[in-house]
Structure formats: C-alpha cells, structure tokens
Length: 258
Ligand SMILES: [Zn+2]
Ligand SMILES: [Zn+2]
Image (cartoon, rainbow, N blue to C red):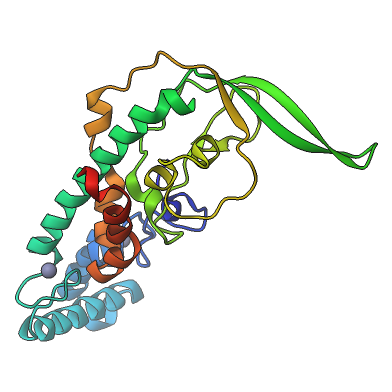
C-alpha cells in the first residue's frame, strides 16, 4: 500500500530518457554526454545527426546552468533563500514531525485493532445488503469472516490527508470476500474514527461486529518502521501544500497524542 498517487496506474514511477530511452531522465543520461564527446572529436561533416544533437544539448545546458547559478538560490520546499530542498532545515523538522506522527498513528492503529476487529486473524460478522434480481429487492446477508493474515507494509498517517493524491486508503482484507472493506467500516461511529481515518464522510450503519478478537501482536518494529511515503511526499509537494493538506489534519486529530 502507498498513498494514492503512487498506486494510480497513470502515475509513472519510472523515468524514460528522451534521448536514449533508458530508465532515467535526460539530465542523468550518460549516453548523450558520451555522444557529445565523440562528436567534438570529429569534423563537422562527419558527425552523425545524434552527435550534433547531443553537442547542442550539452552546450545549451551549460549556458542555463551558468545563468541559474548567478540567480539567488531559492528553496522549492519552504521558499526561503540561500539554500535548496536538499539542505532545508524546515524540511528536516517536518520530516521529523511526519515520522513521529506516523509512529503515533500506527500505535493507535495497533492499540485499537483488537477492539474493532481489524487485526489479522480476527473473526467478524459482516452484515451486508445485496440486490436480488429475482425478487427485485435488497436482501440483508450476514457472513462470518476472518480478517486476512497479511499486514500491509506501508500503512501511514497519510490516511488523514484531505487531498486525494496524498491520502492513503486503508483496506482490510476479509478472507472469502472479493472486495476488501475499508478501515472506516470497522471504526464507524466510534470516538477513534476521525483519529484513525480522517474527516471524510461516511454513510450507512456500521456493518461489522467482532465475534472473536485476534491474538495478533503488533511489534514495536512495525510501529516505528520508516515508511518511504514520507520522503516521497516531501520531495513532491512544498510546505504550504503539506501544511494545508496533511500537517493541519495530523495536529487536529492526533496532535494531543504526540
Ligand atoms: Zn539516456
Ligand atoms: Zn527551505
């Protein structure tokens, strides 16, 4: 599991080089540099088209680099001057905040998992209503189901985000049910609902009853594990956006636990 933007099929996690087709961007391409070097050693007339192109690209890049280094450096993350994202102290602090928030959220997730029946190997009763095509009516069904044993590896506090791309959906697998059920279904109407799943609206009654709580024990290793969504998010968005879409929600919902 990961935040939505990383799961979406149209999101390309692998770069493609427009020069050689390799899995890197053109700025990181070795082939274009090599071709430019080769071209330089040849006389104009005997250069290949590719070598011409490579030489022009390298020359152009050198010019823009010169221009850019004269301009004042500005941080893409906090918009401060004199440093970049790479050595941004504000970002370092925010990373620590997110790591801490994730640990606190996971601890809460673990602590509530038995009571609400989403811990691996819990036995629950799932009440659902299905449309019957023969009678033309909704009929309520009730099934006893076991929560799947696999623990999602990248569960994160980003479930609290208000923005779709940044948010993570958490689905609990139920053995024998083709569609997993959201975490929200398990905690609906309880006092931990917003702390665990954020503010999104949910309708209908709670459909899950715990029949036999699980004996599963969440390890401290899992609770405190690093998650790569944090680094991804810090690279992708800037501070204003994160503040608006996730820091505020974290402070509102679990800030008192941090
Ligand atoms: Zn390349
Ligand atoms: Zn900065």
